[in-house]
Image (cartoon, rainbow, N blue to C red):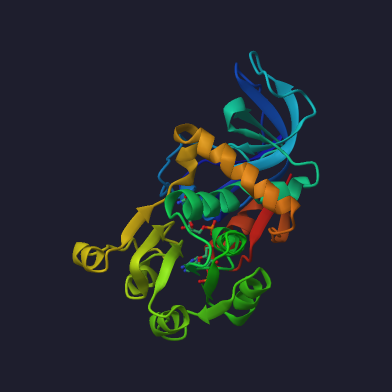
Length: 323
Ligand SMILES: NC(=O)c1ccc[n+]([C@@H]2O[C@H](COP(=O)([O-])OP(=O)(O)OC[C@H]3O[C@@H](n4cnc5c(N)ncnc54)[C@H](OP(=O)(O)O)[C@@H]3O)[C@@H](O)[C@H]2O)c1
């Protein structure tokens, strides 16, 4: 099979596409014939050795796949060869085949094609667990979503609307703001044109109840200035590059919670929450409340370009690599 290989830490240009042996599933694992692998900001970090997880070199990046089961290892009970699945693989997805433990599989809803399915787990999974499980977002509350045209950002806009929130989106250009509005945002602010905090305070009558922040840096700092009394600030990521600090005096005085979210760890530490979350997500998908945006697909040989699009802020919604 063909697979993308990261042989040394570096940017997307350091990746190569090579022939590799078909991986065989061990006990409790399946091999998936990959139809699509979603591209994530984490892929830009993991290949530089800057992600929370630092795999041994060489390795194949790619966190989330959809496809059909090609082989089943000993002891696998719930899946058979040919089943359409989604694999939350962590690494190994940018390849024609990948091995995945049974516990990290989801059955793919019949109505969802492989490319769309590959775009969903990380983005919608993170958005829903953050807003529902970590922030306890309630209908009628206001939700501020930063980087709202990106993978997790756009999913948070849709999930926020499905949960009955008033959604305010921020992004860096008119076309990105238009995408956020098309996917349900009630208001949209270009956060590269001056401060957003006064506009957010005006729109919410004092401050946002929940803030979903995958950007970090200055955006996080300003978010502390436009959060409501009792608000929840969700720490999703640091796409802007700087990891911000939350002064404890502001947390105290404003009576707010700064809430960490690490979706990937729910695969092992929060499996029931994760499964319930996907039941909800796929239910909304069936009801037409979620409309996943795959703005572009690339073939396996173009994986470096796909990852480069995220690193260079060119992506809209999700990008998927199709082996
Ligand atoms: N905690 C978790 O479990 C979890 C799960 C998934 C993702 N994440 C994190 O969430 C963040 C977004 O991930 P994603 O996969 O959704 O990425 P993405 O699709 O590339 O979206 C990132 C967004 O961040 C904004 N941004 C601001 N400054 C940027 C910069 N200097 N470079 C690139 N983008 C910048 C961009 O929007 P504008 O151009 O409009 O500013 C972009 O749309 C990442 O930090 C990622 O690690 C965390």
